[in-house]
Every structure is written in structure tokens, then in C-alpha cells.
Length: 278
Image (cartoon, rainbow, N blue to C red; front, top):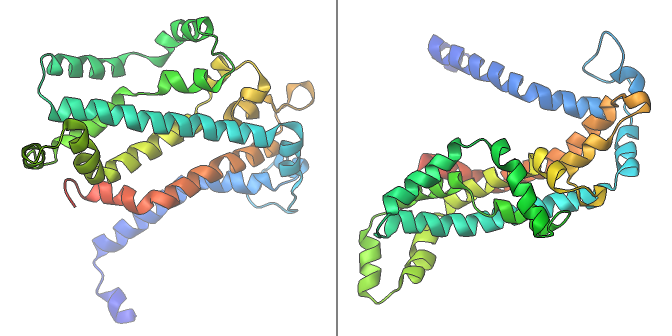
């Protein structure tokens, strides 16, 4: 062991230490959330604050589940984030395939328009979009939450760039064999784009799961809110925010995200490391 340590270069040691420090800084907020969730209120508000709780308690978790329709809010979050993810992957992949693999008049202009929408602030379209959803009677419905986000300009651009990396020879060979465009898209392009689809799906799911403004605007019924918007209802006497209870709710809210990342982490890393055909 000592021989191995002596053989290490100083640059390698310094790089490792730097990575460990950065990792610790990134994980520190998560550690604070986890530890604060199990602190009693007296310790949460104590000064000077301490990282580790002197007394471990589950009262914060019990308060979250008793003061909020927690199961319903978590279910709404899954329906909202999961629904948006599924529809976005379908529509984004179809649009990306057309822009990357098909030749038609106006393709370049259409791509420029789609990319240009990325520069429009979301807040600029929020009021007219809400008015449209209200006119359709979709306020406080899953349709109103999901439909306006069923496609995304970033997702289209992201998948288009991946589809461009696939050799066009496979398209031509399939057409010679009599395959139509949808058959090529379904049987050839999509199987080779699984890592990109999983990556985009993860980003879409996480962004919508964590979104606060959208559910707050498009739902007025507490029963139709998501877990992120539901946590805003937790206020103590005189409007004081119970930080321990908030941390307990946040801890439960991030667990599905951790599970989702662990489930597809291998494909996520594969998409970063490789492109094109497997």
C-alpha cells in the first residue's frame, strides 16, 4: 500500500483532494436537509446551530403527513411530471426526427423558430397561456398541467443533434427494403437513441417535479397541487415557517428523484461517453 501511495503523482493527489472537496460542498445542502428533518423544533431554531441533532425525532415527518394531503400531492406530482415526460419524449422525438432526417421545404427556418423560442422568458407567456387554459376549462385538471408542456424546444433540439449523429445509410437501406418513415423511426432510430431518450426523460421529469410556479398558477385547489406547491402551505403561528417540517417534506420530495437517477444512471453515463450506433 505504501509503495502505491509513493508512486502517486502530486498532481493526481491534488486533483483527488479537489474532487473530494467539491463533492462534499455539493452534498452539504442535502446533508443539512436530511439532518434537519430529524431535529426537534427547539434544535432547529437554536443558536448557534448544530449540524447533527442531539435528539432524533420523527415528529416533522408526522406533521407533514398530517397537515397536508401528502399522498395526494405526491400522486399529483407523479402524474404531472410523468405525464409531461411521456408526451414530451413522444412529440420531441417525432419533431426531432423530421428536422434531422427528412428533407422538406422550410426545415431550416422551422428549426430557427424553435430555437428562438428558447430565448423567450417563460414569464412572458404565462398570462396568455393561463388565459387559454382557463378558456378551455382546464384549470385544476391534469390536462391543464400537462398539455401546455407536452413538447419542449430544448428536447427537440437535443434529440435532433443526437439523430444527426446516426449514419444516414441505415435509412437508405431500410427504404430500399420497403420500410416507411414511421417504420424507420420506430425500428431503427429510436432503438439507437435510447440513451438520449433516457437522459432527456430524466431532465424533463426532474424539472417538472421540482417546478413550483407552474402548479401554483394553474391549480387553485389544494387537492390538485403538487408536492412542491403543497409545501408552501406549511406555515406555523404568525406565519413563521417551520423549517424542520419543511426539510422533512423536502426530504420526501427528493427521494423519487434519487431513485429515478439510480435507475437510469448507467444509461445516463453511456449517453455522455458514447454517441451513434451501439
